[in-house]
Length: 488
Image (cartoon, rainbow, N blue to C red):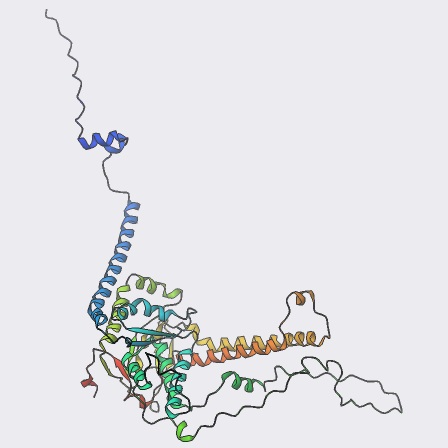
């Protein structure tokens, strides 16, 4: 009987040969479990997070890269102008930039920020200098343009001397040379509110008289008769009269109480100063206007309000469209391609208001649509906040509230000035305003209220752009899309 041998034990398995990279990584102290881990797809939530994040980041990077490429392409087109030699005493081309306050936005220089970001890089590359004029409140641009034109008219007719410049200076240039350089420069209009103010100021400057009017003095004459600072009438005191005694009559002498108070010693108001007398032939507006610097229209829309958030998000990821628009506008100015301005298709006498629908679905009567270049960037007015229609009513509400509280302030100021009562602890710690200070405060508030109301009437959605038929032959616009032959 044969013996059965037990099975031989299995030979020990040799460990798998490690690659040189794995061995090196193990010696660095990395746990082997990390090296044995096999890659796998992330979880569902991680896939959603990575997809959304990479999409947003990719779209942002793509947009900013396109912005850089577009801007650089226009810089390459105009940078050769910066290499052109000029005389050592000459100056480079200079333009004037106007940026008005956008309705409803407390950041008054938003239009100028748009210019700096999207238009300025091309002008800098072409060595074009610029001067920025910012309107902090509605109507500031119109007042600035009006005063500049009237000053130009006064100098032309000899009512005002030219600016004092020493001819001995190396950079001295006659007025005609400076005016010619201004015509070679141009005017940049940022947005439709700026255009409305600019045209209103231009029309007033070439239409109104040349008298210099002090706004504060004129307003002071108007406010003299509003009776808000008049002394209240003292009630008649009842007197007891015995039988047979004569009825006492009130004395015509002034009361000794407060006779020498500051209110009694104030000077009488000065007599009104007559306006400067200007001969009719010099004060009459000219029938033919001189040539004006060409205008560059730069479209600009400022989105305000919570309901505009979707459009704001879209604009954040599509900055390339703004870069393209601003670069094209700057390129037209650098290349000096101009055409005559297109006048309105209907005159002011034959014009009837049309219906205008805002982005919020509100329909109103508008006098803004008139045709031609006067309809520049009119679509931006759809984004005005609907609450702006109550601007004048809000001003009247603040004015009513102020004048309602004014009598109490006046009573306190006069009582303390005359010494009829002692100041309280709070009044001693924080002295209330005097009557002089209240008058100055009222003047400041009235100037602001009236200026805001007048400025709002210029830029409101329903208002049209000011126009004069004398502008058509002398106004030109930077443009490269409409040939001049088609405008005749």
